[in-house]
Length: 354
Image (cartoon, rainbow, N blue to C red):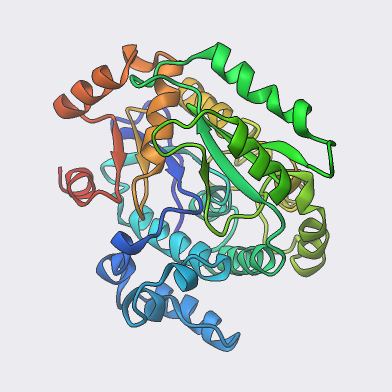
């Protein structure tokens, strides 16, 4: 099932869908898929695809095998689980009441966006996500480290951002260190690099609450360290399943892929090319989404809700609908939520039941 793009004059509420990436399926999300997609025909197909490859099915991982980060956090398991949970939420959105005007995502969320927007079928996206998760886990080159550049009220601190980015040229190339910007994630920067560079960076950055934060079982996504993964992926995954989306897609550069003008070869080339080895600008993607499509609400499918903070921080940077601080955002959310995290059960029920 894919989102349907309709006229901008539609009276239905306009939604921008923001698909989640890695790190959103944790112990608290165990059982999410069973609750929202258990018994569905499409989940049975995805389970069969996994079974044919000698891998535990998504249903088994989500309901039968007790949650263990060492198991569920592995790329070949975590990525398909997140994909299936997100698709269950997107499929639950009523097209009679909501108009999905565009779809984007964070990092791995780009693969989910391809399915949500109709550029890949549900099964084809599963093959892509399963393959990429397995390749990343098999190589697991380098890692990622997260650090914020906003204050406690989520207001931008551009001087701090400049100071953080200055560590890249300062460390890269010294004593075998490789360090890059991996993701521009709202009010946070995600650095990607080899272990030596990330360990040094973690020592240099001032500790702040739980930061700097090294992400568990994450490779150096969106950096040149993924060149080998890129080449292998391009050999295993062909252009054949790709097609023009039914709904506009916004990629990790802020570029639009429109239903009437997308070249499927170019979409394949970006997905298995530049997207893997260059920084992912989630902030730019969200900026294009809110400015070009003027959504009434922004919806983050489950599992989890960790992407909500990054989205809110970006909206504050953009002064979207007058948002200027965390307190302002929270007050607006309590009155009339404009950002919906479907991984939060109350917000999911609010969106689907209103």
